[in-house]
Amino acid sequence: MDATMNNRSFLPAESDLVAGLPHAPLAMPKQMLERAPRGLMARLLGWITPGTTRAEG
Amino acid sequence: MSRGLVLVASVVAAVSAGLVFYSYGTADGPDHVDVIRALLMTISTWWLAWGAAQGLLGLTSRPKPPALRQNGPIRGRTAILVPVYNEDPQITFARIAAMDASLAATGEAGVFHFAVLSDTRNDTIAQQERQWFAHLVKARNGTDRMFYRRRIANTGKKAGNIEEFITSAGAAYDYAIILDADSLMEGATIVEMIRRMEGDPKLGLLQSLPKVVRASSRFGRAMQFSASFYSPIFARGLAMMQGATGPFWGHNAAVRVRAFAESCGLPELSGPPPFGGHILSHDYVEAALLARAGWRVRVDDDLEGSYEEGPENIIDHAKRDRRWCQGNLQHARLVAAPGLKAWSRFVFVQGIFAYIAPVFWLAFILASIAAPYFAPGPDYFPDPFWPFPVFPPDATSKAVGLAVGIFGLLLLPKLLIVLDAASAKRVGGFGGTLRAASSTFAELLLSSITAPIFLMFQTRSVSQVLMRRDGGWPANNRGDGSLTIADAWAASWWITATGSTGLLLTWQLAPALLTWMLPVALPMVAAPAIIAWSSRPQQGSLFEVPSDGNPPNVLQLHDAYLADWSRFVAEGRATERTLVNA
Image (cartoon, rainbow over all chains, first blue to last red; front, side):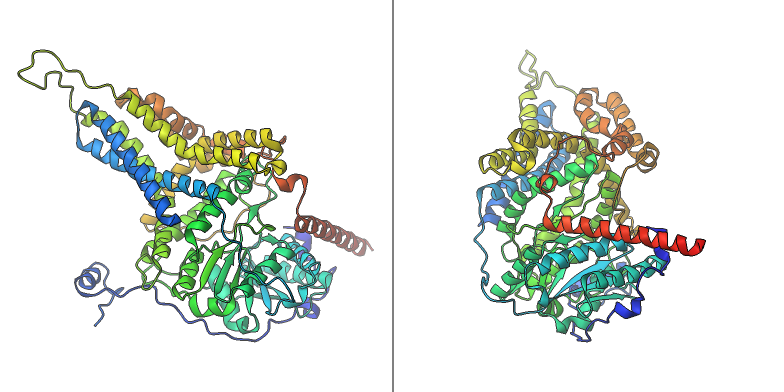
């Protein structure tokens, strides 16, 4: 990294040139990747790692 | 069809190797260790055979030409995303200037915007990023089409960085080209990729095959040659197998923004890192999610003009591998994710296997050293009613046959690629047939010498992940990667110690195996010397690649911008000195 770049005097003022991104929100819903364990597996996992899994239905 | 063929061929090769080994190992009488060794041999050989079959498929096939809309202007608008994380802004932004100039030459630049998405944590570098960005905008007249923003918190790392862009500005764009800070793409390639996206409305992601450029060290040049000479063939084999459930390697790819937004919002995984938390190797997961939502994901191996830089030494390679290892092993949590295509699940397994396969080899070596202790003593009189001794059958030919078969899996695809390149007149850029063959042999030699070192690094990475030690996300060390012997020793003394101990144990426990162990143990003993030597600049024309003699246009543009901007810094420095002296 060039230490001289800390000195800004030879560069144009950034506010003159840096424009903001367009404001155009797009929803990005979180995807389901983890299948909730059921039955015996849920009990087993709940016993091994309490609080991280929850049985369905 | 291709998938089934490759899978069946690799399984047949693996089972055959396991059976031959079992037959060899039990020549002195069967025991449990023989069964374990045969199983380890089967698993390890499958991985080698899988790679070899992929190469052979690439050599013998040609994908259908993609549908594309040839005529008329591009209809959609594209954001070219450049995520940065503590990189040198002068070099990175000069790449943007080069790609912008290259795009301008296509006449289609009007529908492309650049967005620098900074996750830089270092405030000094962030300050320099803003200054260099202002310089970039001025140099390329980029007002209102070049953007810079820095996140306050780098939540979700690179995947979170892209997601933040999409959720705040994604609706303004139809397509995005996702790059890395070290990516370079020709304008014509970018335009061609967007044309292919427009030609196939169900195409969610199009991956190009980036070639490594600007390598200068022995190790880096060998990797660059490998990526340039072999990778297109292996990538074609991969493309044939994956079909519409293709890969995403995280950069140098085009995505359909709407498809990406509706399919690729990544959740945090339950539990703590390294298996829980943010998804590290997000690209594989995003490709799987796009395919799950019905979008096509494709790698087009015929796309030229896509470049990246690679690690210049073994340590930097191992550091990057440590991150990838953790990311791939985390995919164990996702193999059973609901609704994924079967091939996507297999790709996760394959990614995991890439890191655990060396562990199987290591286990095989250790089991072989221990085997004599468990072997039953020779029984020369197995039949109590037969007065003459029965000697165990000589199984040497089986061992030699097996060794030839395994080396064949390693060497054959690469040797066939040389023949194919020579017959297809593809060797011109590699210095002709003779030089391409010399480079291939040198690469084979170097990769054989470095393989035991990588085996150790990968084994350590897997152990660290399994012991729940988070590897973190260090910035890549790019540029001149020369290492001193002291640096190399500090990073690899434990490999030397392990190799020396292995040799001593073999000598004591299984002296008959000493010759077989030497090719593995000697490079381990010499690891610091090999690491330091291979990081030094490569002299001569070995590992020549097409970009040496005929640098791609966008690389030349990058060089020109870098030279111009360096002059600018020097002049600024001189002006400062004058002002101070005045």
